[in-house]
Amino acid sequence: MSGNSRKKIFCSILHRQSHGGFSSFQKVPGNVAALPACFFIAAAILLVLILPHPARGYTVEKHSEQEIGQYVLSPTKYELDMDPGEKANRELIVSNRTGQTVTLEFGTEDFEGSQNPSEATVFLGGEAGAYSAKDWIKPEVNSIVLQQGETLTMNVAITVPKSAEPGGHYASLFASTTIESQQDGSAVNITSRLGCLFLIRVSGAIVEEGSLSTPEISGFSESGPVQIGLVFTNSGNIHLKPSGRILITNFLGQTVAEIPVKEWVVLPDASRRTTVEWDTGYQLGRYTAKAEINYGSGDVEVIMSRSFWVVPWKILLAVAAGVVLIVAVVTMTVRRRRSRQQEMEEELEMLRNRAADGAGGPTATKVDSVPLNDLFPSMQDSRLINLADPEIQLLVGELIGHQLDLARSFIVQGEIDEAHLLLTEARSAAQRAGLYSLVGIIDDLMRGH
Image (cartoon, rainbow, N blue to C red; front, side, top):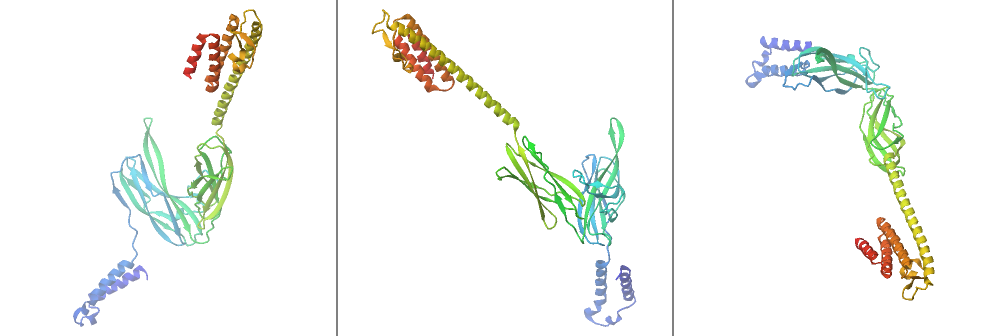
């Protein structure tokens, strides 16, 4: 029954009531006589409920909005599931916070995805896209003037044609204005626009198909964070929202990290990239990134992987330089030690020769002559030397001096035990030879270490 027919019936009821209609009830006593009035009230309520109501008109309200030099539109996206021939309404809010009076113009424009994964959407201007919906969206007003701090709340009607093809249809409702701005002392007109995206899913034969490319990772990284790019290609007729995770495994196959991948929207016949980061910290070796991505209403899963290296070469170079420096210092120390040992052996040989010469001299006595290894056990030489000979005493003093130098070298290298053995032997020899000044020096060294 149409709205006009219902109105005619309602008027007929009023006419009959005003001209004594329902006279058969007037003779009924009691509350029954009030039935015509009850019927009138019930009919009025019914008509109010069933008659179509127009959409609520737009409103403009004044608020103490802070000036930020721009206007604000919300929401920025609507996703709708609709049937062919269905109608829907959504609300759009625009706030003027530019600090001046602006004239807002509203218009629709189709958009679509791009084959360039770095581009999210491509707006088509006045052209109709392959998945057009711009003619389905009607704002309540096409133009309006807003003062600073005023907020427009209006209705947006969405009507899906009965002949609409199943799948995704995409358009944006733009609010645009031209604002005067001061730049370098002169006025410049700047045109800006904000849009609300409408992603409409029309029921029917929906095709959800897509593929994931091999993860995009640099084959060699010095350190983290490592950038991992994922490119998803949508070959269906509806926008998809892939999401999932990336597992990082080392060369032993052990999982060292799990990185969540937030969903990103990929329009039909388009490719789009999302990027995640792995903060490696201090890592070294070969790793594999395995992307496990789900998409579609049936949670279809695709898996792709790629290997890469993380080599902190600057740190390794610094460690290698440190190792080379340590080896060089050790090598120099060993060479100096060998050189001193050789000098000691030469001095010992000279001492042995002179001791041999002095052992048979006329001044040698049993009291003054002692075996060389009695003074220096480490020499293992039992030949007698004459301690009364000034030249022998001089050689013994030189030999003790070499042992002191060698002991100091051991102390520098941290070989305290070997140094103490040499100092003990040198002290005994100095005391036997009567070189008491050397005894004091040796005692000072032994007390210090």
